[in-house]
Structures are given as C-alpha cells and as structure tokens.
Image (cartoon, rainbow, N blue to C red; front, top):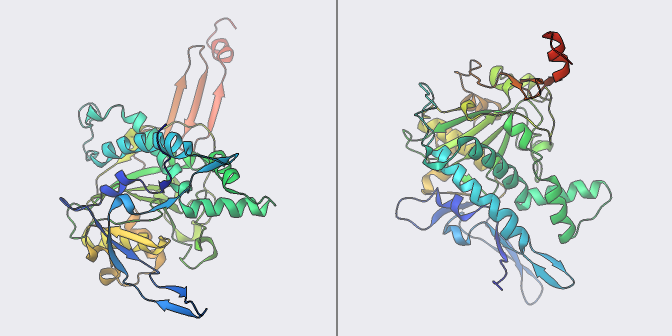
Amino acid sequence: MSPLTRNNHFVPVWYQQGFLAPGEGELFVYDKTPDYTINLANGSPKHVKRRHVSRKGPYKFLRLTDLYTTQFFGVLNDEIERKLFGAIDDRGANAVAMFKEWPNTDNFDFHHSIDRRHGNPNEHLIALIDYLDAQKIRTPKGLRLLKIIAAKTGFIADQNSLMHLMQQWRRFFCTMLAEGFWEIVSASKSGHKFIYSDDPVTLYNCDHYPNSQMCRYPYDPHIFERGTRVIFPLDSECCLVVSHFEHANDPKRSRARQQRRNARAYDQTLLTYLDVHRTRELNTREVATVNYLIKKRAVRYVAAASPEWLSPERIVGEPRWSEIDATLHYDGFARKLASGETITKYVDDSVEFYNEFGERQFVPGWFVRRKKGGKT
C-alpha cells in the first residue's frame, strides 16, 4: 500500500508554481502576523519578533498536517486528499493552463482563436468552476466557516463529520460562478505582477469594508449579493474577475448589498466559453490595486515572485474600499453576451428558454406540436 498523504496542501503546489520567477524555486512570502508568544520554563511568556517577509517554496507552503485526514476505528484515511481533491486539482490545473492563454476577444473567432491542444473549452470551463468552488471551501478559513454554520444549528463537528459536511456543501458556489460575467485581465504591460494569498478565491464587495461584520474571519461578502465579485489570479500575469451581470452593467454601491436576481445554489444552468472576455491590459497602479485587495482579504499570508509586489500600498496608498470597484469594472461590458437569451429545442419538440440569470421557461413537446397543427 502507498504511504498516507498527511501533509495536505490547501493551495495546490501547481497553482503556487505559476507565481514563481523564471528559474526560481522559492517565493517571497509576506506574513501579516509574524510575531508569536512562547511560554518559558518558569511559566512567564516571551514575545518573539520575526520578519514580515521570508522565502518559502511551494512544496512546504500553505499546507497543514491531517487537514483532510479522517479516522475510522483508529485507522487513518487520506481518500479525500487523493481521490477527491486530487481529481479536482488535476482538472483545475488543465483548465487554468488553458485560460492563462485565452486569446484577446476584441476580434474573437472561436474557430481559430482558441488553442485546441488543451482540449474542449466547455469542459475546462466546467472544471475551473468546480475547482474554484472546491478551493474556496477547502482552506482552513472555509472549514472554520463550516464549523460555525454547523455550531449555529447545534451540531459540533469533529474531523470526520466536518469532512462529510464539506462534501455536502461542495458546489454551493457553482451556479453563481457559472452565471457570472467572466473577464481575464492581464499584467503583461505592468511593472508589478499579481500576487496570491492563503485564500486564493477572494470575494470582494464595494459596500463591505474589511473591518465590517461580513468581512471578519472567517466570513466573506455573500456570493448572492449583486455587488460581490470573485477575484482569482490565474498566475502572476493574469487574473480572473467574475461579476454578477447586474453589477457589471450598473456598478452602483447603493445596490451592492441587494440580492442578485434569481440568486440560488445547486441548480442547473447553461454556460458557454464565448462569454469569457479578455481585452484589458492593466497598468502598474491598477495591478497594485488588485494586489492591495488580495492582501487586505488574505487571512495571514500573501506570496509573489518579488518582494516589491507584496507592498502595493507603496503605490496606491490606502484607497477607499469602495473605489477599488472601479478597477475591477469593465467599461466595455455593453451586454456582449453569447448566452443572454438561449432557446434549446429537444428531440421530443420540447422548447426551453433561458436568460442570463438562469430563469427558464419550459414548453412541453405536445403543446408545441399542437400549436403547429400536428398530432398531440
């Protein structure tokens, strides 16, 4: 039998490697709370100071022992790490590799623009949504939130029940991610590049400040709110921003806390890779603004290939939290959606109408045939 996998990375190694400088094996890591306290032999506490910035390699960074390990009758089990997250990470790595090379969509020709060596774009789109959902819930922050939710119902979760609860909650974010407006922004012309954190899938809402109740550990702005955006750096050169259509079309802070139209989870929807846009090249200040957001929403660590990128406040200062939304807003939205309204016809003549909010109307085949004058 193969040895147990007990050092569980809650941010995969392959993802962290996308932020390494060429030829380097370590990252510069910023620790927001590096100092700690130890108890001496005489019982008195001693405060130990450490540097904020250190060097760490992806294989030993952002991992915890037995984070996903379960135990039954005294026997340890690592199937969640190997079989569940192992499969999700493999598919997610392939999906990220494709979207990092996503072509400019100003003059998009889907027959020739997409590099097909990565495989089917629709399959990778689904795989990336599944990965983003899993990445959000698998971190210590995500698991801590599940414990709190369980405790509010009167259920105290041990490790085994927590892992079971995590699998029950999987795919909670998928419907909202699938129905969002996807934009990939580039840092290729910027002096600074993107950083990542110990909570790589960052949720931002312009009306929920970092010290507000909804942003205190382990909480996040709710994915159902129309102003909530998802920020996920694919690597140091490009970053994915997912926004609700209503906010992308009309980004008003006064409405940012309102629930998105037809907000829901665990529902089927239609999606297409033709709605993934890539047109913007961010400048250094704009990239630093995104990095500032990622750093403020990190639990403890952020990492990058250069120590300068870990201090975006040296460029942007302390921007108003609500004003960061302007950097994430895509002025060319103009409702260029392939899936704005979709009509699907089935072999039994049934017809289903979808809009961009997932609202659908089903017309059965017998009704369609009767209206056409055919037999029912």
